Amino acid sequence: MKTFLRTKLPAILFFAVIFLLCALTVLLPKETVSASERRELARFPEFSVETLLDGKFFAGLSDYAADHFALREPFRMANTALRTGVFRQDAVEGVFADGDFLFTPPGPLDEKAVFQNARLLQSVAETYFPENKHIYCAVIPDKSDFTEKGPPRLSTEDVVQTVQETLDAEYIDLTETLALSDYYRTDTHWRQEKIGLAAKALLTGMGGEWHNPDFEWRTLDEPFYGVLWGRYAAPLPGETLSYGVNAATEAATVCCLDDPNMTAVYVPETDSPDKYDLFLGGAVSFVEIESPLARTEKHLVVFRDSFGSAIAPYFLGEYAKVTLVDLRYVASSRLADLLTEADDVLFLYSTGLLNTGGILR
Image (cartoon, rainbow, N blue to C red):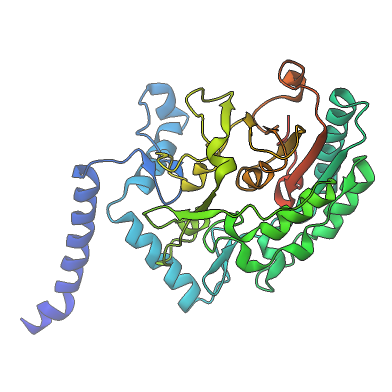
């Protein structure tokens, strides 16, 4: 009996656990989306003689099994704990940790990509605002700029230099207005309640006047878990997602090209897996905001990425109309049918986006 317990029982238990996990993988209901990773899970591959012979069926089956394995989330967390705690690896899925802050440094510098993106923005300015002298640009630093952890990272200064050399616009520096604490711990984006100094720099840099927007800060009921939280797969606590409401945001009306039903600045009831989408619906191509309580009759056009959704409400006290354009989702050639004359034009992009080739259309 002692020999059996010592030599046979461990093997039996091992295979029993494997059999149980395989059985659970087959029998348990299958999810279609991973909420933590913000992506669709692999579907069971279509079987045919062709896919069997060329290997696509088994490749798809492997992806399906990896995405739907029983207890997948606990295993992902255990993998992160093992890699960072035992093997002392700095990164998991390209995500680094500095205390409770997660980040994924962009880089290395792709000078060609930055030049091409800046050149496209210059073409937009020349084509649609040829007589406008009030054209501005600003680069949003990646939050990895504010930590020493991780590998050598993309230099924001190098990106800014290329942009300034290529885009004929007045540059507004945001570097001194931001710190690591102004970004979400588990996400790449900045926190709306922390970017008042950045908003002030942009408004005054465009010749406007800064008045305290006097926001009432509301929060979502459930904790916010950012996109980096899902990739890193560690049991880090969620955080509070706040959004600022005042008379201007309440009176504003929104017209969204992608979603005609979206009429308000905030969508707190969004069913998106990314709760950051409460800011103007998230990834949308073209949004117009009418602000009847603005101090001026001016129109601001902002060419932006997802960071622009959170800062736009700061502009509603100054501009009667704010138009947001995301060139990732609408081709610049379509703008003739969408844009009207603007008093001010702002190109506002994050470092990581400008360093990505082929992302702007």
